[in-house]
Structures are given as structure tokens and as C-alpha cells.
Amino acid sequence: QVQLVETGGGLVQPGGSLRLSCAASGFTFMFFAMSWYRQAPGKERELVATITPTGDSTTYLDSVKGRFTISRDNAKNTVYLQMNSLKPEDTAVYYCNKRWSPTSWGQGTQVTVSS
Image 1 (cartoon, rainbow, N blue to C red):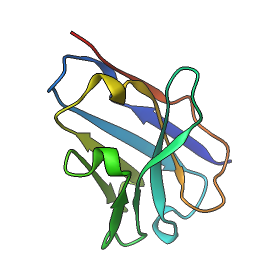
Image 2 (cartoon, one colour; image 1 turned 180 degrees about the horizontal axis):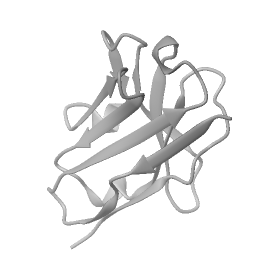
Image 3 (tube, rainbow, N blue to C red; image 1 turned 45 degrees about the vertical axis):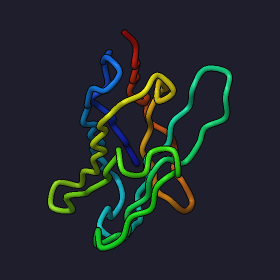
């Protein structure tokens, strides 16, 4: 049974930082490109960042380039999202999933950027 558990969200002031984690189970994690997605209230879910199976290449949504960093630890079946210089427009529920053929979604983790 595939399971994705996202943690690390919270309330942070503009300019602050958070590190999200996603623990995956139920599939061979090291074989799959993984991504972080986010969904803000009233908006469609959007792709934020992707990392290849070996971690040798990453891609980002233009609006987060230079501020967010995706990484992974295949030994721990975990993918991370380091978020720096956070802005109010980054407020959303953040999810992780496979980049291609996403599986069932986890509960996500809420990130709120507000003063």
C-alpha cells in the first residue's frame, strides 16, 4: 500500500524558512522521480519542484527558483523541500508524489506565510 506522509509545515513570517519532509512507503522509492506540489485556496494544484531518482537533476517552478531546494535520501525513502525567503504567495498545502503517474495523495502539510 502506497503511503506518503508530509510534515514540517507551519506558520512563518515573510522572509522566513521551513523544511518540509515526505516519507514514502509502498513502492520502490529509489526508482522514481519525485515532486513537491502545492495547492492554495481556490486554486489548482501546481507542480513546485522535481528531483530525478538519483538526485542528480532538479527543476523548479519559476516563482520559487533560487528560494526552494528539493533533495532526497533514498536510504530513508524521504524527499525534502527547503524553503527560504518565503512569501505570502507561497501559502498553500504542500504535497509530495511521484512526478509521473502520481499515486494516491497524502494529507499534505499546511504552509502559511503571514506577518
